[in-house]
Every structure is written in C-alpha cells, then in structure tokens.
Amino acid sequence: MELHTNKRVIVGFALSMVALFALGLYTYRNNQQVYLARLAIFHSTQVLNHIEQARSNATKLEETLAWYILTKDSTYLQLHSTELEQATVHYTNLIKLTRDNSKQQIRLDSLRIIGRKKLDLHQKLVDLQRTSIAEIPKPLLESNRELSKNIMLIINGLLGEENRLLELRIKKGEIEMGRFQITFFFLIALTLIILCLVFIVVNRTLHSRIEAEKKTQLVNNELEAFTYSVSHDLRAPLRSILGFSQVLKEDYNQILGKEGNRILEKVMRNASRMGQLIDDLLDFSRIGRKELFITRINTQLQVEEAIQEITEGNIALKKHITILPLNEIHGDINMMKQVWINLISNALKYTRNTTEPAIEIGNTKIEGKVVFYVRDNGVGFDMKYYDKLFNVFQRLHNSSEFEGTGVGLALVHRIITRHNGKIWAEATPQEGAVFYFSISNHATHN
Amino acid sequence: MDAIEILLIEDNFDDAELTIRALKKKNLANRLHHIADGEEAIEYLFRQAPDPLPKLILLDLKMPKVDGIQILKRIKEDPEKRVIPVVVLTSSKEERDIVESYKLGVNAYIVKPVEFEKFQDAVAQLGLFWMLINQPPS
Image (cartoon, rainbow over all chains, first blue to last red):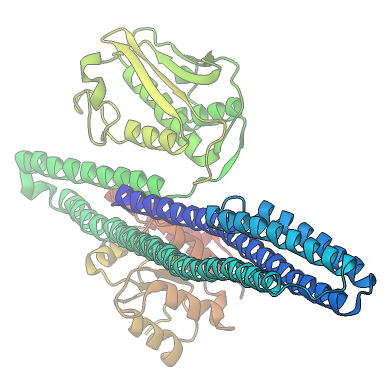
C-alpha cells in the first residue's frame, strides 16, 4: 500500500512536470511563430507602401509631362526627373522585398520593360515639344495612354497579390492563435487535474496514516489497561491461595498429616512460582513501554552498586568478581542498572557449583565501539541452543537445578535493543559463558 | 463500642481476612473496622464522622464504584482528617498509581507480596510501626 501510493505520487508529479514542460515549450514556440507572422505582415505592409508610392510616382510623371507640354516651363521637367528618381528607389526596394515571390518578380520585370518604353516615349515627346511648334501627333499620345493603362494594370496586379498575401498571413496568424489557445488551456487543465489527483492521493495517505497512528495508540492503551489488570487481578487470587495454604499449614498441621503437608507444600511452591512469573512478565512489559531517559552513566559506579545489591554485602560472593576499568556511557540509568543486575546475578547463579568461581567484568573495543562483557567460568551452555537464549520464558537449564523464570535475559535483550545496541554471547558447556553488549552512543530518546 | 484504631478499606474479603490475621498475631486487630466498599468508606468517614478519628487507615486502591485514589483524595483534602496516616496496601505496582498516591499525600505505599509470609511480615511491620512506633499529632 505504502509503495503503491508512493509510486502513484511520483508518477503524478512526473506527469505534471512533463505537462508543465510541454506547456512552456509550446508557449515558447508559439511566441516565435507569432513574431515571424508579425514580421511577415510588416513585410507585406512595406511592399504595399512601396507599390502605392510607385503608383503615385507614375501618376505624377504623367502629370508633370502634361504640364510641361502645356506650359513649356522647364521646372516641370525637373519635377519629372525627381519623380522618376523616387520611382526608381521604390522599384529597387520592391525588387529586393519580393525576391522570394516569383509572381511579383515577373510583374515587376514587365513593369520595368513597359516603364522603359514609357520613359523613351516621354523623352520623344519632350524632344518634339522642344524642337517644333507643331502639334504632337495623335498616335504618340495614344500609345502613351495605352502604356499608362498597362502600367496601372501591372501595379494593380502587384497590389492585389500583396493584399491577398497580407490577408492570408493575418488569417493564418488567427488560426494559429486559436489553436495555441486551445492547446494551452488543455495543457493547463491537464496539469491542474494531475496535481489535484496527486493531492487527493497524498491527502488520503496522510489521513490513513493518522488513522493507523490512532489505532496503534488505542491498542497501546488497551495493552496497558490489560497489563494493569493482570498486575492486580492475577496476583490477588494467588495471594489468597498462598495465604490460606499457609493458614492450613499453621492451623491444621495435625489433621493434614505428613502426605497432606507435602502436597500443600507443592501447591504453595507452584503458586509462588506463578507469582514470580507474573511479576517478571510485568517487568518485561513495563520495560517495553517505559520511555527512555538518557543521561551520562558512570558505569564503574553502576556496576559496583549492582553487585552490592545482588550480594547484599556478602563478601564471600563479592570476592569472586573482578571489575576492570569501565567506560562511561549514555543510556537510561535505571534500565542499564537492570542489565548489570541481571547479567551479574546470572553469572553468580551459574557459577554456584564451580569450585573456584571467577567472574570478570570489563570492556573492550570492537570496530571502534565500546563493548562491555561479563565473563564467568560457570556451567555455560550449548551453543546449539543459542537462538533460544534471549527469548522470553526460554531456559537452557532445568529450574530444579537453577531457579528462574526465563525472563532475565529477555529483559536485558529488550533494554539493549531499545538503546539501539547489540547483545550476544559465547559459551562452552561446563567451562563458562561470556555475555557481550554495546549500546549506541547516540541512543534515541524513544 | 471502643474507638476504632485501624480502619481497613478492602473490597477483597480474602485479602482482608489475611490482613486481619496478620495483625491479630501482633495483637493489633482488637479495634479494627473493616469496610469492603469505597462508597461505604466515604459514608463512614464523612457522614458518621467517627470520634476520635482512627489512628491508621489501610487502603486498597482497586475497588468498584469509588476507588482508593478517590478516597485518599477526599481524606487528604479534608482539613480535619488529613492528619490520619493512610497506608496504601495494594496489588498494583504501576508507577502511575504510586506517583499519584504520593502526590495526594499518602503516608506509605505497600505492594502486597504474593508470598504469604512476606505479606504477613509486611502487614505486621506496618501495623507495629504506625500503631506503636510512630508518634501522631495529638
């Protein structure tokens, strides 16, 4: 479920990023196209402008010539040549601007040819006017008018073509703009939808996580209530069993007889043992729930205190124990003390039948980590049962031989694990055992 | 009736019987009054208002209806009865019960041992201490 959700979120984000990237790329490309279209439109208007100017020049050329013929004033000839110059400029520009449009080039070419003819005719008319006073022959004027008509036709052709192009370009731009808008909004909507979906998925995951945490909290509370009632309700009847057995033993000793008393002893011993089991189990569950309170621990002092507590000052027992210099550590002081008490009392318990018990407590360094150890020369155990060593209620020795409930080492294991540490052991039957443990320097506070 | 010296508030009759037996052995149960219900204990202490006050209250924590903590709270909030030594005698080893009881001003907190001999010792010792050794305010 977790992985599934994560995958969905990642895919969602990837998709929305792709959509956003596409959006950006598309907008950029469109911008460039808009720019190019605008250039094309500008180009068309330039061409149109030059054509208009050229037409105006053509008209003016006719006018100035007419005025010269009527008035014989040479100023009109000057005006005529000025117009001609301007027309040439416009013509050159048009040739340049429309060089990629063959239709217009053809038109311009024929305009040049007819224009040349027309200028020759104009020259002829001027010369005639200058040299003779006779009337200008009608055919000449006729052909002049014919040429003018042709020129205007060509110019109109140029204009028409350019206008058509302009219209085409504007229309194309509009279509592209429309298409861009549709794609743009589609991509934006797509991104928004994907992001919404991602949001829903993330939100749902968060919600279910909160639910799960609530459930865990509930289970924990129930567990606590359960152990609490176990602590009270299981111990109370046991106390009655033991108490009234004792009453029987004290007050009805005679009636019970020897066998009766033996059986009563058995009842009491088993009830006691059950009491011990319940107490140990409660300790075990309490350690699991209790929050760690990490402080600096003077291990040397703590080990000495633990030994004092276990031996209750019994010097005969104490003299079997050698304490080497021990490093300070960070951990929960009460829990770590429990670790030492359990390990050392185990060592004492299992060296009970050894002729010369020797217990050594020290530390060494393994891979840069401080490792504490408790070594004894007691009964040890068979390494093939090692995997049972730290389990609750698992024992490697008979309880008639060595008393115990099988919680001590499980408790130690739990404490060390909660300190992010490691515990392990090595043993040889009848030769002894060594218990090692290390705890993290950065034990977490939970 | 003679004045009550020890008030035992305990809903479990078996535990009460064993407690009384242990006290009897030390001759401390002559003027003991047993109440087996929290509600009744409140009624006895605050309605009937015994005079003189008991010299010691032995209090169980887990009882139906009104539990020991509530009774302890009532006693220690009462300007007159707060001087009575209250010893909690319970099966509960729970840290929060111990802390709560001391916060409320309990005079001692004793976890009933499962083993009868230890239980008997504990009850006898606390009876001797509070009844004979301790000097209460007069």
